[in-house]
Image 1: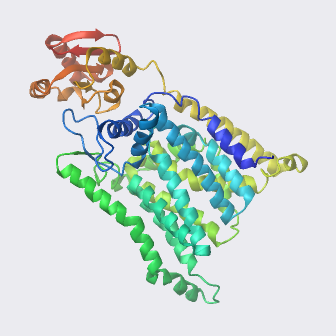
Image 2: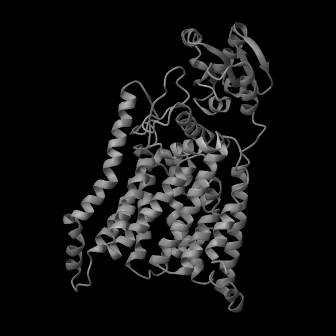
Length: 498
């Protein structure tokens, strides 16, 4: 039986992501992964209550947190109940969602354009460097991206055939994407375009077409769709805020102007655009060379009105960049949504000159364009390999926090509290599999230490790098004079509290 080219693409995508699939939580964006993994672990250990996610860095308190809907770590926790508590399970689930995303993107592009464009889009999306790394990390982004793709795919199906199943599946997936990441509200723009298209006709008057397109405003079905998409998120985020009000903590998802979004002064800074579009998208996501076929694809002719979905999609992502400016400035994985429409435009460029349906034809009709695109393609593959390798280099088994964790596990019981000195990063707490506090050196006041010791803290552990600033260097000497040093190396130090 001859396998379809798509299956080879999926197999390739799987194989190149198996490297380090069993690596413990850590490496690039270890902070984000550690919080997600801790929530999954606490679901598993504390009763699977989906509506009460818990973090490790609130010491003896429950650690309920105001956050996005934690369906991804909850699914991981359910798998823990079958396979046991292993970090690779979260990575494997992310990879599973990524493979589904490739398949869904293929279906969507095949519907709005053609088979060859769909194969190229799937292939490009599979090999972009940031996608290679972030598709197998312990984070909810692969679930969010998969939900966006299938939400749009089923919505396109529905506006064509009006099947109830497609309608409710689209609403379900879009709702999940917004629950997982509230910023996914930007996907409303391409959905709005599709909703208008549903009521467009070939009337001779442009004004008549506009009027017909605005009919969606009076459509009960579309208002029902909006309710199904938005009401679950409204209910969840209200509940999550109540967790904070009632003594919990927060990921600061509503920190307008103080954290990830609402920092509009950044929009006036040239360095913001340079860092975002050159330092992150061009380098990390497109391996530089991918910019060329992306720009070409933006100017290639559209085969139909539904294909313009991708125009509105990429515009909506750029709008999201501007609204969540500080988040996109700080975190390169915030730009992962860009790769979905970008893969389409890159794939469309290659598909115009090279067929993946019958690769033999490439060699029978070589010309300047196919040669040029073949060179670009090869350079893209090399660039993806180099950049992905740099991402993977952050996953090092010799990093100090693994050694600290082994020592802490030897001298503490699982239910004993610890203090980790860092930049509020929960990674060491998670690696130690202990609850406690993750604080900066200047937080170690006499009052703070007395309070935490009275609660049962047994160990203070840290990497020495956090004492390098001049204002913090004296604090290390104070700790040495006050507590017993149970382990010290050039990289880290562990104090035992009697």
